[in-house]
Image 1 (tube, one colour):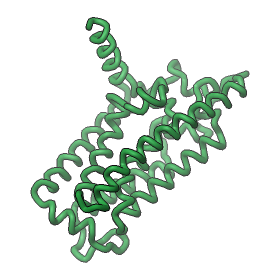
Image 2 (cartoon, one colour; image 1 turned 180 degrees about the vertical axis):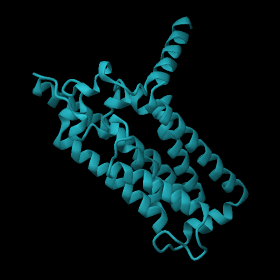
Image 3 (cartoon, helix red, strand yellow; image 1 turned 135 degrees about the vertical axis):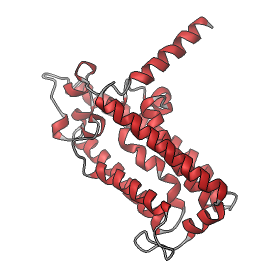
Length: 252
């Protein structure tokens, strides 16, 4: 149990509690949630004063700002785009790196297409008033939890599209904020758009770093991304679950 794994499990537990709290409000006071989400904001504060949802907005913003201005406590998966997260593998094949980049870019575009198509369904439902702003908020909080489910337990993008060996090596690791706040694009107020467009900035920064320094994102050119150098072991639970699934499939 590494220090980073403990932090990840604590974050997962916290996000689960946030989901339970918002779900409780959704069940008991959905009309109030709808009114809150449709209210015109000024710098995130409504005329009704500070509510638990303002606190939630603050948590979301601090989370994203920590990725725009990363500190020492973040995983190497986030920091590999920085020079401090890079240790060059001497004599690595530049042509192979370019081939890997091209292949990963294609897979990343497939993920983006799948994600936007999936969310387009909810966007249409929202625009036709079949679901409302509270439903979109609930979807966002669910995605907030799913971010750590993908890190710790199972990631459909890793399994079915990207085929990266672990999160540390993931081409789209810092796309999580853009993904979780995609539903907020369709609700026009400060609360929602400030979250979505800040998440978009995180995505742009990640893509800029990847385009400028692709050698920092591949274990064939960055020694720190190799399994033998890993001190975080965030893949442990996910690998054990995958091995159990393989064993069950072989028995069947």
